[in-house]
Amino acid sequence: MDEMQRCAVLGKPIAHSLSPVLHEAAYRALGLGQWSYTKQEVAESELPSFLGSLDPSWRGLSLTMPLKRTIAPFGIARNQWARELGVANTVVFDWDSPSTSESQDLPAMALYNTDVYGIVRAFHDAFRTHGMTLPAQPNAVILGNGNTATSALAGCITMGCSQVTVAARHPDRSTALIDLGAAHGVTVRSIPLEDCLPALEQCDIAISTIPGTGADVVARRFAEHAQPIHGALLDVVYDPRPTELMVAWRDRGGLAIGGERMLLHQAVAQVLLMTGTIGGDDVDDALNNPPQTGTLEQAMWEALEKEL
Image (cartoon, rainbow, N blue to C red; front, side):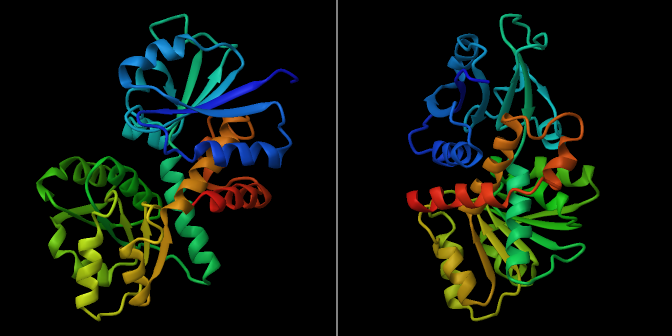
């Protein structure tokens, strides 16, 4: 395969995306000198025309907001969470198969959700690195109930959680999360964000999906209470790094994981899918039990660290 192979991340806004850093580092590590990865600002209304402009040199796309749901009608969801959530952050093109879209001018597209995989892998790696064991049925807390909280809950389900507390500014907006949990036999309760400290102090894993500095109010509550923490926290935010919540969590004795680890692992999965290393009907098993990727992950991590 001597011709250039193209991939890109789409979204609006997109200037902040670090995906090109990760994917280009992966191509160097894999010796794929003919592969390139760029970022393209594409709004929801512009997605059909963008897809229609592509040629067979295109191998895959990463999708960020607001396109993770918009892409659904154009392809077929090929892994569990892309199907169940209706949210995909990864497209892999198949130019040799008939299109599944209403427009026959478009290539066949396989859609995947690697965000959930990134969350789960971030926890498993952190637990292994620190010599800890993830409980068989961990008790979890999710901060926030927006779009990212859906992937967070899917991650909790994947990790075997039987009870999840969602703490949010508007707890009445957690109905979809409660329904998703119920579909998997998981009890989800929703509480006001200001009441989350007792749940956080008792949980095995916590995931903050609150963007920006929105979780700082929780961090400051920690500063007022010296109760120790035993669980592990993943804060999906990676700027600032570390967040106030991560600092407060560590000060109370807990294990805190930055969002850059989730970013890394979801990108590793994307690379494996776009390059055809994994795929097919058993893709969920392959994502949960990936081939040896230590060298690839290290190369991508080192490139990401330079940018953060």
